[in-house]
Length: 135
Image (tube, rainbow, N blue to C red; front, top):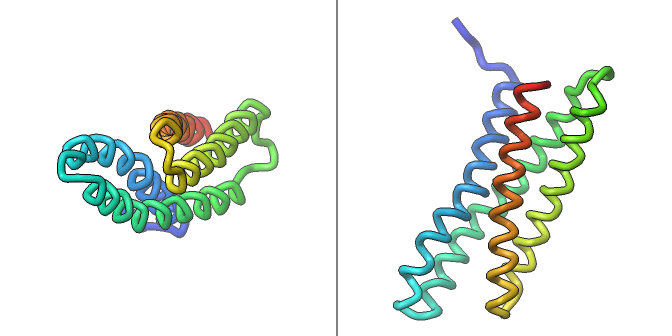
């Protein structure tokens, strides 16, 4: 019988939180246009509800990601470390984009930072899979 380990739990939390963060962005992107006809308050309520779930998920993803790097072998390849570095830069960029998106009142800034956050999120998930299959 397979038994979960602390690494299994860490990885599960990392993937779950990333799914909430990235998947939630795309779910919200699909929902918001339909809410706009109800008025700006409807979109604001949806965005605030998402933020209550998404930001804690982002923090869990960052914490479990940092925790996961503590398991890296000393002989980890330079290519692996380069991809990990790019992933970490994209995590910072995604968080920054989301932060600007959340506080901005400019529609063009919200559109740009929302789109960037989605692109960064997809790239982060892809690089996470790449690292997981080559680690």
